[in-house]
Image (cartoon, rainbow, N blue to C red; front, side, top):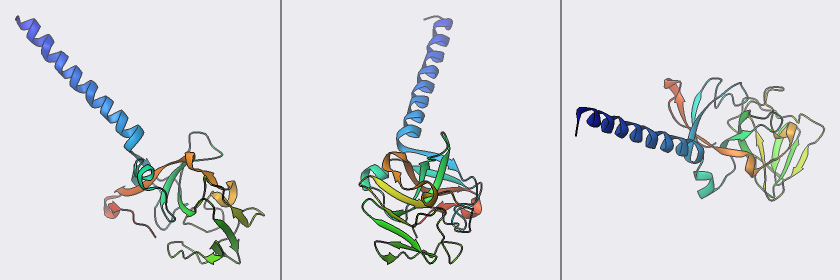
Length: 181
């Protein structure tokens, strides 16, 4: 084997290794996990503008979506935009917002993570009954005008939920798992 053949073999091995690494990275990003950056204040005081999060895409297919999960969704009104919201209502639930309180199936929903004591509706609708494949999501920031969520655009279908926000990467001072409420 000549020196040129050895060099060619070495380059070919590097190209194969790099191609396999790229394929694995793409598969991981599409099916298993990704990162996302918080843009805006709709999840204050739980998450903040510019927080960098790890998004788990696979667990919701294994264990489902539960009330109080923080999820990444496709924005219903803006193609290509992602929102970060908290799941309040599950399929079949009745959600009511009345006198500043959120009710799930007739019971006040405890929300010690929100940044104000009052939740208002953002449209004239104050009651939502969720279909078999619908979820009701809201931001933790309930100051009027701070969160575009199901109060404005209505319940979302399961196919629009991308994954769970499970881990905060940045800022380093808040590094760690994002717990449920």
